[in-house]
Image (tube, rainbow, N blue to C red; front, side, top):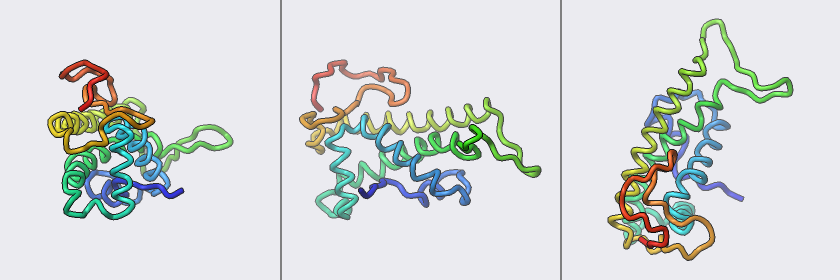
Length: 180
């Protein structure tokens, strides 16, 4: 099964402070987790699958799909950027091995403390939450452009009312049966 990514390794490295030598074996799972575990519950499974399909088929750039392209470029990709970085921070510099979980040390490089690493993760989660909120606000106002947001499929219904990482209610009607 082919994995469809909505952002690339190059996008992450170009638009963040992530070093160019971070391996794809760290970034690919972090991007995939950000999409499946973070983005899908926000968009709902129907809209999520539609966008994945358009990207896979190359039709996201078609003129008739400009609303989907706008959603991808303006809201989804910035969200995924910071969610991916938050996901990748614990992976880099840490290795799961037969002897346990280990960190690499070099006499010229000093690893961050756990507190500093946690702070860095939290800063990126904060940025991801910001873009999550922008996306939710946009979808609440423009939900009619995306008929896949009707929650008739198996999977997640769109979450347009809470912060993705904290679960805090951000306002709006608290009616779980409401369709956008």
